[in-house]
Image 1 (cartoon, rainbow, N blue to C red):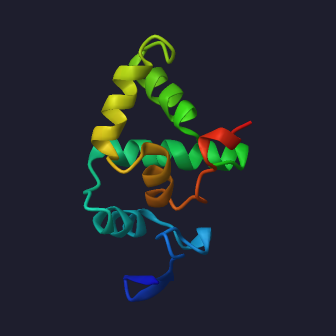
Image 2: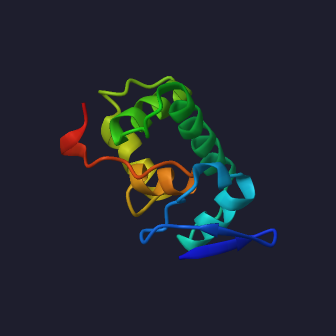
Length: 118
């Protein structure tokens, strides 16, 4: 499976994740989002950048809980008290699962299932 961006073939795995994380840039993100039926709004772009920064710092794809904490910090909300409303909002942005769809568009490795999180 592959996509073509700026004349370059970008290899994807069977689920649409990048096989080479170094192939990612914002144009690749836009193409990946498009293949998911999404457009890269300012809010999605912001979350993609935050997820990539999280990965660069921790060498780990952010879990849904960690994404909720990132969003809560942005809006001055409590990640525990406001979890449901933030989660609902994230599903509006990434309807096929915020952790998986955000990671895919951000060019990150597929997240672990939630029952294996540390």
